[in-house]
Image 1 (spheres, rainbow, N blue to C red):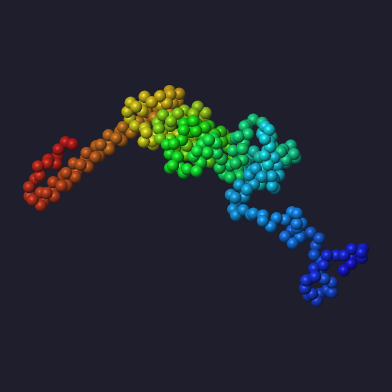
Image 2 (cartoon, rainbow, N blue to C red):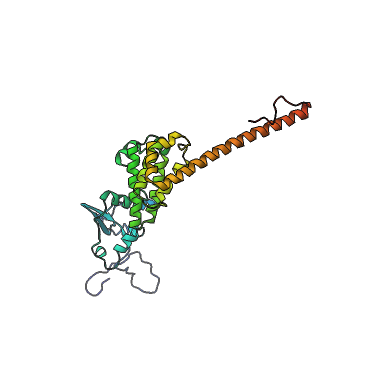
Length: 308
């Protein structure tokens, strides 16, 4: 069929004649791409699709495919995707909208943070997690579960992870990433939970207190929770004479006050438990005595009122 200009229109040969017109149906010039009309050099029949939202983020992390802006930190340039980054970060959402230079250039430059920290932020935005320990840790313990790692992590690794998690918590506030603040606290809780020595526990606590100011800082509260509930904390000279404990209490009077109150509370609880135990024994003796009298009509040799 000709359009009058000598050009042939594309005609569907299998078009159904419904009797309304003698002319065959001519499809529009633009249509949804399909394997039948995509050029061979661009169509990949082996293209892999992702199955869930988490996999989507992981597949796009550090991937130029569909990237619509860049993040520049020092000499590093990383591809990013507004749909993923801006929906989770108030900072990036504001920077990449309206008439800001970043929005026009499609590039966000960060000059006051380290490439490692920004990389960790991007890792979280795309995968909802980040590495808080250094590379040697993952090489040695990466394939072990939490129970298998228990008691085998070096103090320097715990300090490294604590510094990282503190940085991520600070940057979560700076860049308006609520999920990152929550995740950094969860990861620090895991770091502290892996410690089985009062010396190491207070050493990490000193790190937390030296890099935070507010008494109600979430990291301080997490440390206090583990310190006060720890089986390593007990009422004797060894606890108070431990150098990290003395240093921590000397530098943080409020924590020292709370710790002393906790130790007194533990001592009172211990005394209360002793009294409860002694009373339980006396009650049981009285019970047995009553049973013996009922059965034999005679009192046992043990005095039920004995002072235990």
